[in-house]
Image 1 (cartoon, rainbow, N blue to C red):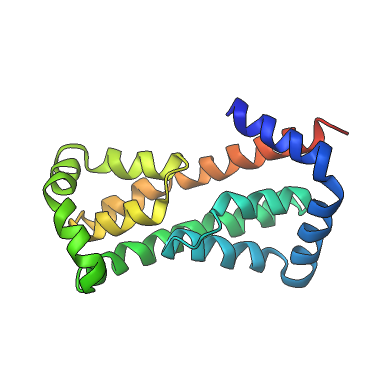
Image 2: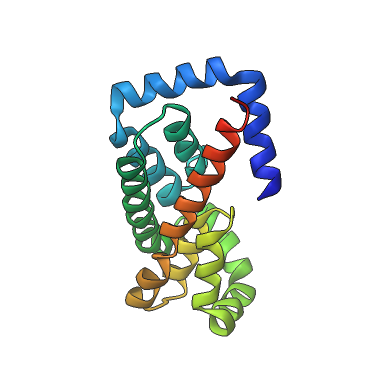
Length: 172
């Protein structure tokens, strides 16, 4: 967390103007919906831009906290749910399916032993949440349990927003 704070503070010191310009443009054009779709893609399909980037954009553009975090949280839940249901279909794609099958003994053991904790760790850490959700779907974790543990994404989004806001404003 300290490293994340330091990175955001350094970005604020050295790149505040261009980052603010890009963030404001994105939020002016798309509003919280832009944050929503960015996080939905990231958490649903492992889009190359991490979901926390969009939370950072909200901070840099000075988007009001409630709409920004509401969009982020709902998008993350929807994205994780999409990934959960996409996971089993990935096993049918030859290129991906072979790799999943090679990992299956370890992955199956991980989910059998740690189950909800596996999803919880994926939900609160910088690990790609979508990949954890894919495996939850592939290894048939009960959806209700999966969804309930995914709610941990809300405090995660709040903590990241707070860290970004502290780092971004620390240099003013």
